[in-house]
Image (tube, rainbow, N blue to C red; front, side, top):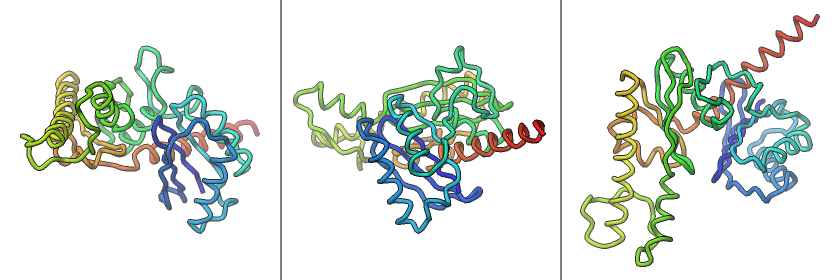
Amino acid sequence: MLLAIDIGNTNIVLGIYEGKKLVTHWRLQTQPERTADEYGVLIAQLVSASGIARDKIRAIIASCVVPPMLRMTQELGERFFGTNPLIVGPGVKTGIPILYDNPKDVGADRIVNAVAAYDKFHDACIVVDFGTATTFDFISKKGEYVGGAIAPGLTISVEALFQRASKLPRVEIVKPKEVVGKNTVHSMQAGIFYGYVGLVDGIVRRVQKEQGGGAKVVATGGLASLIAPESSAIDEVDEFLTLEGLRIIHERNAVQEIKKKAQGK
């Protein structure tokens, strides 16, 4: 079995695969101050509670955009699961050319999403990931990661509005019944929700125009299911796109390792 771990700035998403099947998954809060022991015990308990023996997990792959947690991930794999985790980064076979000016600048999660999206569509596509930041990534018809756009995440935007406007309250992110709110809370919710739908549709429309149109659009991330139904640009939501990308990358690197060993013989 494979343990796939996506470490974001706000949440850690974990999934266990048996072959190509996602058996179970969890979402934890990202806390860089936690030790490998703390996360190890927590994850081991989650695995056991799912009825999976810890020794059944033979491999771990992780993507991480929080540098302080890289060492923790390494220690967690070695101490609790007896395996050296594959960390997505330079030197790891992804199977996707990166056309960024400096490929090392691209977040691991964006590359992982691109791998999964292209594997899904085998055509030009755009990934919209609603995370701490909302990212828009374009993958060409040839399967190349071309680049994208980064916008402040929806939660960050709401928090900034609350902190910088002294008379505005902190509000829940929900779809309001009307665009024209009749009180402050509803007015804020309308501006936040529909404003973000407009941001998503506007950026995707511009990417489509710039790249020649026709690209499939897939959304992922915590708030994708909230925004997508009102978006005219998003074709589908895939909650586990990043985990699937991790599984594919692990599979490609496992095949590469087998080939190396065969050649060595």
